[in-house]
Every structure is written in structure tokens, then in C-alpha cells.
Length: 152
Length: 211
Image 1 (tube, each protein chain N blue to C red):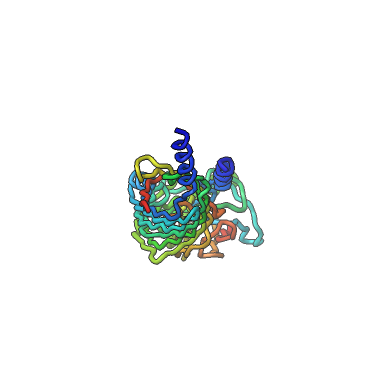
Image 2: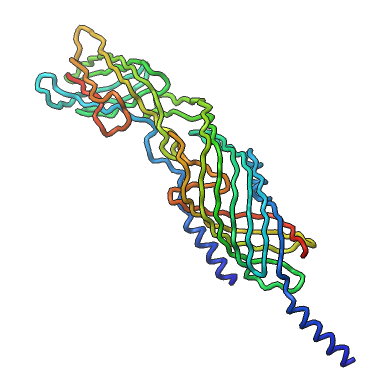
């Protein structure tokens, strides 16, 4: 009888050993951005760095699509997109505006930050490498969808 | 001398056969009280059990006030729970003792509220700052119910006073999902794992009334 009770106790111990305190989800949604040639309409890579105030958000990379992290502490700000094709750095500034919201994920993760009512405008300068910005999805709730197209 | 010893032997065998039929026990869970105070909250759990031969039926009632604090979010839970139990005592007591080694099943139900005090917004880049929000949002009228299998040992420490140790396996049936939050804590159940199974360990004190 005692052995049976010990066995039952051990059984429940094993069955309950499922840790739920690890969070594997990203804490906020990133802006899924693709870069497109404004003449051909096809995706085309750029050599790019993204800066925010004094910090580097995206280190130099050559790509035609990018997940760009967004601030959660303010809802309007500017990012500088520096194009380094051909060895000359050409900075263009985009102004972002959105509403911040949260979605509960799990006990371990807490809340994921999501964004909606996204608006982007380009500051005009003498040699913009960015021709046009198109918002495909103004509600950013998952990284997997394309949110923004940047024509260059 | 012989007659006296024979008579004595006879009365011994008669008293061994006379079993205690009914029992009434009231108890309090010390383990939960200590653990809850240590965590900055409070749990008071009482139980009442009635036994007939080796069968035991009981009711457990608790009132809880607990706080959950982690880096990602902080909330408090306030509510009550009750459990209905049937258990069987496997221990064969000598006369005058009421020690128990029991195996039982319970049905538990809780009613409670959450208040979300604080949560963190974390950006997808470590270069950007994280911030805290303080919504003070109440999720009220929540319910949950579950089943438990419990194994306990109860032994007398003073006259009528028993110390109890128990271990339980729990199966969560269902609970109301609060809007944009989770069933993150259930009074009386304590953990909601993904698998719906939980495990409990505890100790308490009880007083057995003589019948």
C-alpha cells in the first residue's frame, strides 16, 4: 500500500514537470519591409543602414527585405535610412506615426506590443534614393506579413 | 490467576473488534498560510470531513488574496474556492487511534478577480528602451473548475490533534478566459500549465472530534 502511494506521488510529479516559464515569442512586432525597384516594380536589394537618433537600429546589410524593430516608448519618430550603394552614403529620413497596443501571449511571455494605424512620410531632400513608400498593412500584428514597400 | 488471565484475554479480543464507526474532523492548511504570507498574500483554507468506517467525505473552503510579480507583468488575484472530496482510508487503526493514509478524489471550483497593475512593453531591438504601463485593469467574475487525486497521511501528535501531509495531482477542466489576458492564476489550483496538469504538496493540522 505504501509503495502504491509513493508510486502515485512520483507519477504526479513527473506528469506535472512541464515548465511553462520560458518565453519563446518576440516581445513586439517588427515592421516587415520589402525594397522594390521603382522602375521595374521588382524586388531589388539595397545596401542599407537604419539609424535612430544616435543609435544604429539596423547594421549595414545588403538585402531586399528586412524586419525593422520599432520603438514602444513613443508613437511618432524618425528613422534615417542610409543607402550605401556605390560607396556614397545617401541618407533619407522617414517619419513614422502609429498607435501602440498590446496582446496577451502567455503566462511566461506576458504581453506582445502591436502597432496599428501606421503612417509613414518621406522628408524631401535634393537626392532622395527612396522614391515612394507604400503601406500594405497598417495593422502590424505579426512579423510574417509584408507591411511596407519602399520603392527606390 | 489462570481465570483472570483468560478473562483478560477475552475482553482484549472484544475491544479489538469494536471499531470506531463515525468520525468528524476539522482542519486548517498551515502550509498554504505560510507560503502565501511569504509571497506577500494570504490564503485561509479550512476543511471539514466526516468519516464512516473507512469512507471519508469532506468539504474544503478557502479565501485567497495573492500577488504575482514578475519583470514582464504584475497582477493581484482575489477570490474564494471550495472543494468536495471523497477519500478512502487504507490504514488499519488500533482502537483509540484515527491515523489515516488516504487516497481520494476532489472536485474544485474557484470564483475570483484579477487586477493587472503593471506590464512591460519590450521593443524588438535592445537599442530601444522598454517601458512600463500601469493599466490598473480589473477582470472580474472569473470562474474555474478542476479535479484532483489526493494522497494524504494523517497522524496524531497530541490528543485529538493530527498533522497531515498530502500530495495531489490536479487536472484542470475549464476556466473563463479574461479578455486580452490569460487564466494565469487560479485560487485553490495554483498553476495553469499548458498541459492542464498540476501537482501539489502540502501540510496541515486537524482536530478529530471524539464520538
